[in-house]
Image (cartoon, rainbow, N blue to C red; front, side, top):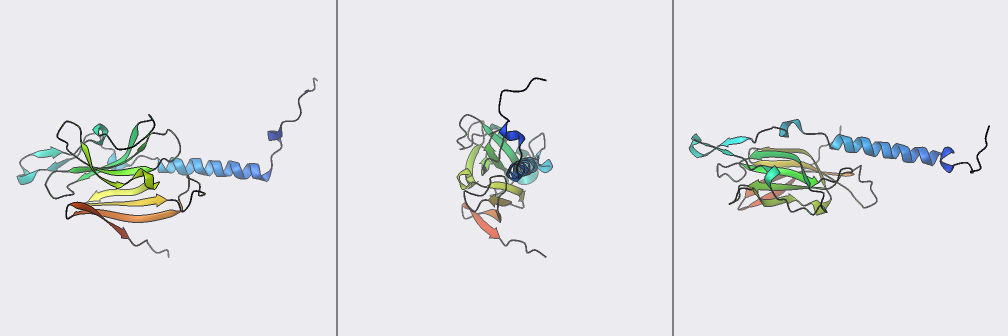
Length: 192
Protein backbone atom coordinates (compact mmCIF):
# COMPACT_ATOMS: atom_id res chain seq x y z
CA UNK A 1 0.00 0.00 0.00
CA UNK A 2 1.30 3.40 -0.95
CA UNK A 3 0.97 6.17 1.62
CA UNK A 4 0.14 9.71 0.61
CA UNK A 5 2.71 12.41 1.08
CA UNK A 6 -0.11 14.95 1.34
CA UNK A 7 -1.59 15.95 4.69
CA UNK A 8 -5.13 14.89 5.53
CA UNK A 9 -7.69 17.00 3.69
CA UNK A 10 -9.61 19.41 5.91
CA UNK A 11 -12.99 18.69 4.31
CA UNK A 12 -12.90 15.04 5.32
CA UNK A 13 -13.30 16.01 8.98
CA UNK A 14 -16.90 17.24 9.23
CA UNK A 15 -18.09 19.46 12.03
CA UNK A 16 -21.62 20.55 13.06
CA UNK A 17 -21.05 23.92 11.35
CA UNK A 18 -20.45 22.10 8.06
CA UNK A 19 -23.77 20.24 8.37
CA UNK A 20 -25.59 23.46 9.29
CA UNK A 21 -24.17 25.22 6.21
CA UNK A 22 -25.16 22.26 4.01
CA UNK A 23 -28.71 22.20 5.42
CA UNK A 24 -29.05 25.97 4.90
CA UNK A 25 -27.88 25.69 1.29
CA UNK A 26 -30.31 22.85 0.59
CA UNK A 27 -33.19 24.83 2.13
CA UNK A 28 -32.31 27.76 -0.15
CA UNK A 29 -32.38 25.51 -3.23
CA UNK A 30 -35.75 24.01 -2.27
CA UNK A 31 -37.25 27.46 -1.55
CA UNK A 32 -35.97 28.86 -4.86
CA UNK A 33 -37.38 25.89 -6.75
CA UNK A 34 -40.77 26.45 -5.14
CA UNK A 35 -40.78 30.13 -6.13
CA UNK A 36 -39.81 29.41 -9.73
CA UNK A 37 -42.69 27.04 -10.52
CA UNK A 38 -44.74 28.15 -13.54
CA UNK A 39 -48.20 29.59 -12.92
CA UNK A 40 -50.65 27.29 -14.75
CA UNK A 41 -53.24 30.09 -15.04
CA UNK A 42 -50.78 32.38 -16.82
CA UNK A 43 -49.23 29.85 -19.19
CA UNK A 44 -51.70 30.07 -22.05
CA UNK A 45 -50.01 29.64 -25.43
CA UNK A 46 -52.07 32.29 -27.19
CA UNK A 47 -52.74 35.81 -25.96
CA UNK A 48 -56.07 36.19 -24.23
CA UNK A 49 -58.70 38.21 -25.99
CA UNK A 50 -61.28 40.59 -24.56
CA UNK A 51 -64.45 41.91 -26.10
CA UNK A 52 -64.13 45.34 -27.66
CA UNK A 53 -66.78 48.04 -27.46
CA UNK A 54 -70.20 46.92 -28.79
CA UNK A 55 -68.98 43.28 -28.84
CA UNK A 56 -68.41 43.37 -32.61
CA UNK A 57 -64.67 42.73 -32.65
CA UNK A 58 -62.06 41.45 -30.26
CA UNK A 59 -58.81 43.11 -29.34
CA UNK A 60 -55.74 41.09 -28.44
CA UNK A 61 -54.06 41.92 -25.17
CA UNK A 62 -50.48 43.24 -25.42
CA UNK A 63 -47.90 40.44 -25.60
CA UNK A 64 -45.24 40.93 -22.88
CA UNK A 65 -42.76 38.81 -24.86
CA UNK A 66 -42.56 41.70 -27.35
CA UNK A 67 -42.21 44.51 -24.78
CA UNK A 68 -39.06 46.36 -23.79
CA UNK A 69 -39.03 46.50 -19.97
CA UNK A 70 -37.03 49.14 -18.05
CA UNK A 71 -34.73 46.60 -16.37
CA UNK A 72 -30.93 46.72 -16.20
CA UNK A 73 -29.93 43.05 -16.41
CA UNK A 74 -26.30 43.31 -17.45
CA UNK A 75 -26.84 41.47 -20.73
CA UNK A 76 -28.79 38.57 -19.19
CA UNK A 77 -32.16 39.54 -20.68
CA UNK A 78 -35.52 39.41 -18.95
CA UNK A 79 -37.98 36.70 -17.95
CA UNK A 80 -41.73 37.22 -17.84
CA UNK A 81 -42.54 35.11 -14.77
CA UNK A 82 -46.30 35.76 -14.70
CA UNK A 83 -48.84 37.66 -16.73
CA UNK A 84 -52.54 38.44 -16.62
CA UNK A 85 -54.85 40.57 -18.74
CA UNK A 86 -57.89 42.70 -18.15
CA UNK A 87 -59.45 46.06 -18.92
CA UNK A 88 -57.91 48.13 -16.14
CA UNK A 89 -58.88 51.64 -17.27
CA UNK A 90 -62.40 51.04 -18.58
CA UNK A 91 -61.65 51.77 -22.24
CA UNK A 92 -62.89 48.33 -23.41
CA UNK A 93 -59.36 47.38 -24.52
CA UNK A 94 -57.35 44.87 -22.48
CA UNK A 95 -54.08 45.73 -20.79
CA UNK A 96 -51.50 43.14 -19.76
CA UNK A 97 -49.86 43.17 -16.34
CA UNK A 98 -46.52 41.33 -16.27
CA UNK A 99 -44.25 40.21 -13.44
CA UNK A 100 -40.73 40.44 -14.87
CA UNK A 101 -37.22 39.83 -13.54
CA UNK A 102 -33.71 39.49 -14.94
CA UNK A 103 -32.88 36.07 -16.37
CA UNK A 104 -30.13 35.48 -13.83
CA UNK A 105 -30.12 31.68 -14.19
CA UNK A 106 -30.08 31.04 -10.44
CA UNK A 107 -31.09 32.74 -7.26
CA UNK A 108 -34.14 34.90 -6.70
CA UNK A 109 -33.70 38.14 -8.62
CA UNK A 110 -36.10 40.93 -7.61
CA UNK A 111 -39.20 41.36 -9.75
CA UNK A 112 -40.91 44.32 -11.32
CA UNK A 113 -44.64 44.55 -12.05
CA UNK A 114 -45.49 46.45 -15.23
CA UNK A 115 -48.70 47.45 -17.01
CA UNK A 116 -48.58 47.18 -20.80
CA UNK A 117 -50.81 48.68 -23.45
CA UNK A 118 -50.63 48.69 -27.22
CA UNK A 119 -48.02 51.13 -28.47
CA UNK A 120 -48.16 53.23 -31.59
CA UNK A 121 -45.77 50.75 -33.23
CA UNK A 122 -45.82 46.97 -33.22
CA UNK A 123 -44.40 46.49 -29.71
CA UNK A 124 -46.45 47.02 -26.54
CA UNK A 125 -45.33 49.83 -24.28
CA UNK A 126 -44.96 50.03 -20.51
CA UNK A 127 -47.42 52.62 -19.18
CA UNK A 128 -46.98 52.02 -15.45
CA UNK A 129 -44.55 50.41 -13.03
CA UNK A 130 -46.46 49.04 -10.05
CA UNK A 131 -43.43 47.45 -8.34
CA UNK A 132 -39.91 48.60 -9.18
CA UNK A 133 -37.17 45.92 -9.01
CA UNK A 134 -35.12 48.40 -6.95
CA UNK A 135 -37.56 47.65 -4.10
CA UNK A 136 -36.02 44.13 -3.91
CA UNK A 137 -39.39 42.32 -3.88
CA UNK A 138 -40.58 38.94 -5.09
CA UNK A 139 -44.19 38.55 -6.22
CA UNK A 140 -46.65 35.76 -5.40
CA UNK A 141 -50.43 35.26 -5.58
CA UNK A 142 -50.63 37.56 -8.60
CA UNK A 143 -53.95 38.14 -10.41
CA UNK A 144 -56.06 40.61 -12.40
CA UNK A 145 -59.80 40.51 -11.69
CA UNK A 146 -62.56 43.04 -12.34
CA UNK A 147 -60.13 45.86 -13.10
CA UNK A 148 -58.03 45.24 -9.98
CA UNK A 149 -54.45 43.98 -9.88
CA UNK A 150 -53.64 42.04 -6.71
CA UNK A 151 -50.39 40.53 -5.48
CA UNK A 152 -48.52 39.44 -2.41
CA UNK A 153 -45.16 41.19 -2.11
CA UNK A 154 -42.36 39.27 -0.41
CA UNK A 155 -39.41 41.25 0.92
CA UNK A 156 -36.60 41.47 3.43
CA UNK A 157 -36.33 43.41 6.67
CA UNK A 158 -32.57 43.93 6.28
CA UNK A 159 -29.56 43.06 4.14
CA UNK A 160 -28.62 40.31 6.58
CA UNK A 161 -31.72 38.23 5.78
CA UNK A 162 -30.87 35.39 3.36
CA UNK A 163 -32.27 36.08 -0.12
CA UNK A 164 -33.79 32.62 -0.23
CA UNK A 165 -36.13 33.32 2.64
CA UNK A 166 -38.12 36.59 2.60
CA UNK A 167 -39.22 37.60 6.09
CA UNK A 168 -41.78 40.26 5.16
CA UNK A 169 -45.11 39.89 3.35
CA UNK A 170 -47.60 42.49 2.18
CA UNK A 171 -50.87 41.98 0.29
CA UNK A 172 -51.59 44.86 -2.09
CA UNK A 173 -54.02 45.87 -4.83
CA UNK A 174 -53.91 48.53 -7.53
CA UNK A 175 -56.87 50.16 -9.28
CA UNK A 176 -57.03 52.80 -11.99
CA UNK A 177 -58.51 55.97 -10.44
CA UNK A 178 -58.27 59.56 -11.60
CA UNK A 179 -55.70 58.83 -14.30
CA UNK A 180 -53.27 56.79 -12.16
CA UNK A 181 -52.92 53.43 -10.47
CA UNK A 182 -53.76 53.75 -6.78
CA UNK A 183 -52.19 51.22 -4.43
CA UNK A 184 -54.03 49.87 -1.39
CA UNK A 185 -52.59 47.59 1.29
CA UNK A 186 -54.84 44.85 2.58
CA UNK A 187 -54.80 43.72 6.17
CA UNK A 188 -52.65 40.67 6.75
CA UNK A 189 -54.64 37.51 7.47
CA UNK A 190 -54.81 36.61 11.14
CA UNK A 191 -53.43 33.28 12.24
CA UNK A 192 -55.74 30.92 14.11
